[in-house]
Length: 235
Image (cartoon, rainbow, N blue to C red; front, side, top):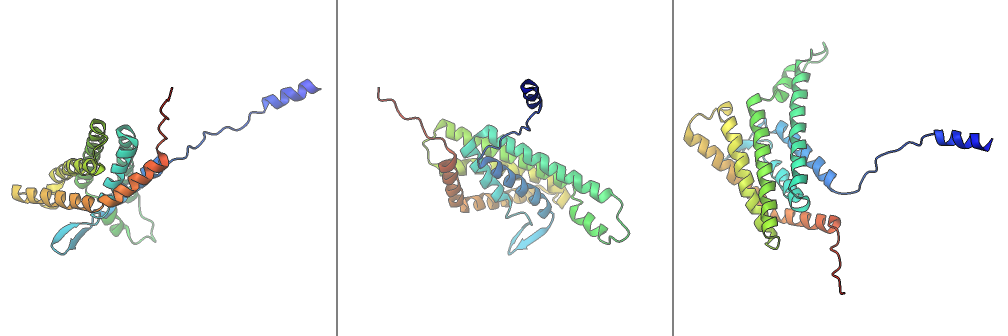
């Protein structure tokens, strides 16, 4: 009788789950992806602020680069590269979902099909420019920052942050502008150069302004996540 009970108990398999590891990395990745997906939608609106003509995502791109800096400085290039490709795939998936939703027949009671298509029917050329610029810029930003850190980890953090920003933002702006120029009506070389220079200066300036924020976030993440260095042996 006892043997039967033991056999029956062993046959009952307990439910097993993968443990969730506590940490800030997945939170940063989630925010990084959300910011990029939202910026692709808000960028479809033209915005004029004084003499500056830009798009509705101008305040979001610096945030994405700040998060990219934090990821690269704290978690390294490989972990940052994973976050970048997740963001790329998510943005591409969002665009595909938009086009499917636009293509689906509208219900009789739905009166906003034209507005829906106008807002979410992003110009393919602009989408391609945004995705390509994002991938190139963020990968350059993370690669340069980690290379500088590996070469001289004792150098001031601001050197890595600004050095990587200059390279990453230039790559992002140049690729985006070269692909998107004709879609927004730019047809001459002087206008293209102006478009690239203004965009690059604006984005880089914003990151420089946000440098104190990046410093604080990096310090907080390292304090919370960095494992303690092993004690030196006295033997």
